[in-house]
Amino acid sequence: MAEEGTIVRKKIQATDLMNKIMADYFYGLNEAATSGTKKIAWCTSVGPAELLRAMGFDVYFPENHAALLGATRLSTDMIPEANAIGYSPDICSYLTSDIGAYLKGVTPLAKAYPGIDAIPRPDLLVFNTNQCRDVQDWLAWYARELSVPCIGITSPKSINDVTNPLIDDVARQMEALIPTLAAISGARFDMDRLRETVALSRECTELWRQVLETATASPAPLTFFDGTIHMGPAVVLRGTREAIDYYKVLLAELEQRVTEGVAAVEGESLRIYWEGMPVWGRLRQHSELFAGLKTNVLASTYCSSWIFPSFDAKDPIRSMAKAYLELFIVRSDAYKETYLREMLQKFRIDGIIYHDAKTCPCNSNSRYGLPQRLEAATGIPSLVISGDLNDLRCVSDEQTRTNVEAFIEQLEEGK
Ligand code: SF4
View 1 (spheres, rainbow, N blue to C red):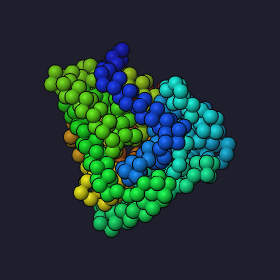
View 2 (tube, rainbow, N blue to C red):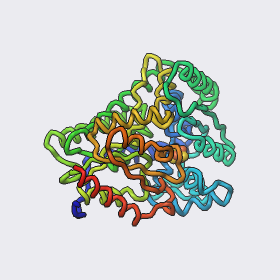
View 3 (spheres, rainbow, N blue to C red):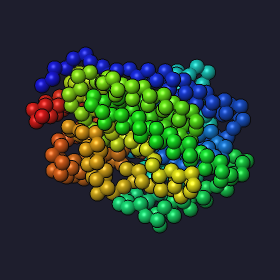
View 4 (cartoon, helix red, strand yellow):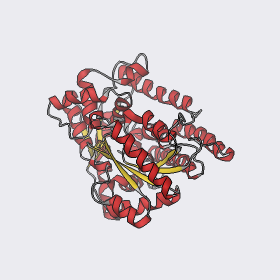
C-alpha cells in the first residue's frame, strides 16, 4: 500500500480573489441590512435565486452560513441550543447549527469580516423543498422568530423523468411568488431583467461545469476539497457578473495546470468519486488523508449540483423550474444510478466513497442498496463512511482513517 506521507493538495492561486469576492458579498449584505438601502431575501441553496435578484433583492443563503459554521467547527456547540427548543439532533445539522448559532448570538462572519456583527436580517424568506423538507422548517422558524413572511415552492421528489406537467407545476408556483416579491421589494416584475439574470446564471453554471471537468485530466488539477470551497460564488452569487468573472480566472488557472501536467495531488495514483455531503469540520484532515495516500478525490455529486444546464434566458421561469427539478437530489434512484455510472466513466474513477451523513438522509445514497447495484454493474468498488456534515459527534476520525486506508489498499491491489 502507498505509504502515508506529508503530501498536501496544491494551493489554487485564484483563492485570494475568491476570498475578496466573498468578502465583498458579505459586506454588501451587511450594508444593505444595516442601512436599509436594499431589501434582503433569504433563499434556500437551490431556491429561485434568479427571480429574487431580478426583483431587486440582495440574496443571503442560510445553508452557506451553516456550512461556514461547520467548516469553522463552531457547529457542534450550537446544535444543543436548537435541540433544547425541540429541534431533534436527528434532523438536518445545518438547521440545528444555524438556529442554535442564532440563539447564541454567534456567527463566523464576525470573525472573518471585521465590522460585521450579525447575519443580515431578512425582509423575506424563500424556500424550495426540492432538496428536503428541512429547509422549509428551518425558514419557518425564522419567520416566527423575526415576524418575516415566508413563501416558497413545494417540489415533487424522487422523480424519474422531468415531465412537462411537473415543470408546469413548479413554474406556476414560481409565478405565484411574484406579487409578494413585488410588494416587499417595491419593484415591479421586469421580464427582461429576469432574462438577464438567468443568462448570467447560465454563464456561471457553464463555467463551473468546465472548472469541475478539468478533473477529467490525468493528473487532475483540482480536488473535491477545492471544489467545496470554490463553489461558493456559484452558490451565493449565481446570477451576477462577479461570479462569471471569477470562474474565468479559476478556469484559466486550472487549464494551465492541465497543459503543464500539474497535479493537485502529487503522484496521483488513484481517482476517487465522493458521493454525499462533505464533512465540513474535517475538510483539511480528509484532504490530507487522501493526498498522503497519493489518492485524489476529484469528482462529486455535491459540487456538481450547481450545474444547471437548462437555464434559458428565452424562457426564464419555465427553464428555472426545469433546472431546479433536474437536480440529482430531486431524482429517483434509477436516475441516480445512471447519472453516477456516467460520472464514473467520465472521470475514470477507481473507487467511490459514500458519505452516510447521519442528519441528511436526502444526501445519503447508501441506504437503499445503490452502492451494491452500482458496484455489480460497473465493478468499481465502494466504501461507505458514517459521519455527518456538521455534527462532529457523529464522526469517528479513527474509524474513517482505518476504513479509508483499507479501501485504498484494496484498490491498489486490484489495479
Ligand atoms: S439537503 Fe440535507 S443538509 Fe441540505 S438542508 Fe436538507 S437535510 Fe440539511
